[in-house]
Image (cartoon, rainbow, N blue to C red; front, side, top):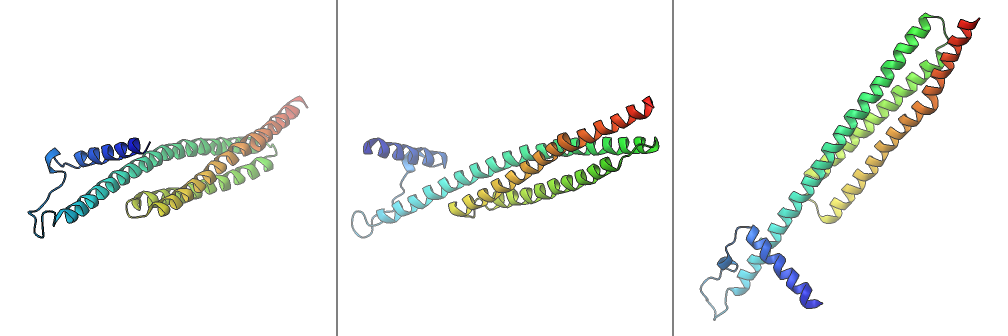
Length: 196
């Protein structure tokens, strides 16, 4: 088992070195020996270790930035679609309130729903903006931070993402549980008025 692991590690180092632009014959650069046969070999191995470590860090950094950017783009699209739907609901609600008010119907509950919906939309936008700033902060600091700092940043990002999703669910539930019900009540007022 140990030989398999060591072979995998050696293969990984070899592939990493090749991807960094080192030729096959230039894996270890050794200066002419000074103090004996292997005088500078230790320094060359240390330099090689640092170069490999830097190359691995750069690849990990690029990978993290790419993943965060992809997720941020997807979430920005989600925000746009959610906000367009919420604003369409608000506009429709405004039209219904105006038309029903002009015809003498009681729209006080719908006006309350509209105000509550506006508050919920503003909360969604505020939480999304804080999420966006946190994810940008995580992306920009991905290379400079340690693994623990990156993990903590991503935990914060995930917590804010949960908050944004809860806000979206809250608006959806409010629409189905309150606004639709109050629209039905308004329709019932219209039918009662027409039948009188």
